[in-house]
Image (cartoon, rainbow, N blue to C red; front, side):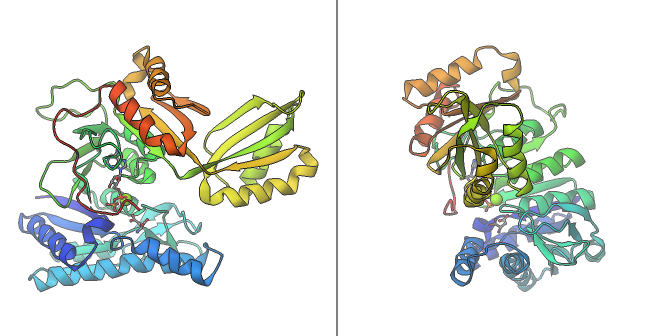
Length: 425
Ligand code: ADP
Ligand code: ASP
Ligand code: MG
């Protein structure tokens, strides 16, 4: 007997039938003698639908009311899951993020969890109840306003609660059988990974593999929470995300050099053309961007094709921040004296991740050979110790991912990876 945190994603609670199926699964865990704390996402594509609705009434998609609106989705599913369990004879009680003690900073839309005070959850668990918590939301310690944790943030709610309650495991139930060597929606030959080290999972998540919210992995690593990613549609063992050093009983296979290939089509590229090539100018550009609270990803600087003595600086950022980056930079154009701004949202980032690459020479060569064999041009390149990423045209992302997947011997021999549900939205 132990304490298990289970998180069910949107596709696992997409409709009434799914909610009953999940309720049954939760009941089985409770009946096996475990204490169970459940975190739920909004049903299906509810969050996207709420965003579409917001767009119809306002051009401003941020701030207090926007976060309040988005938390509604999770409140619907938490109460329905609790009602389903109770109708099966269980004792379930639902809690909003705020009631569950999920305390955050005050940045709407991408709040960070600063502490968790799960007193009400603990009390309910002590009474033998199953607690059902609305994911993706918290309350600001200072303003007392309701906040959201960023898209996909229910994973982070689950890991944070697992840490605070001292759970034995945080199970993340989704619409695929675990973490694969590539997104199974893009690569049917993707292979399920039995285990992934936190470091690799961090790079995969940061590179666009939305199977886990990046912050949930950061949190799990910091608080040593083992994550088990698995499907709510099957009984298969999923993927264990845990520390590299941890020995798992019966495990003898040597860790692979490459964990997988991730892709991300959610970024855009801004190019500042004809920047005076002298010290301090790049600093001015990036200070301007930082002061506007825009997060950038990759950066490259090239000799400008336009004129000598000038350079072009390109950077990538979330596509939704593109307009703000352009208007912010336009304001400082007279001061910095660059020539023009270009905006390109038809890009994709493709990344190869593997802890083994730091000790195996030749990975970079195979990487670029594979891309060139399918005619993919790398427009920007960035690396870490265990990752190589390139920016390419969005319309060749599937070819690029498939080519790398094959070149590094990741293609599964058996059948195709199963995607049980979800719309991939
Ligand atoms: P949930 O609603 O359960 O949180 P998400 O849609 O957020 O589910 O995440 C699951 C999806 O992540 C899968 O359906 C799959 O398309 C995508 N995905 C991207 N990269 C990977 C990967 N490496 N392994 C498994 N799934 C991945
Ligand atoms: N419902 C939120 C989203 O769609 C949070 C989550 O599912 O984790 O992003
Ligand atoms: Mg998710």
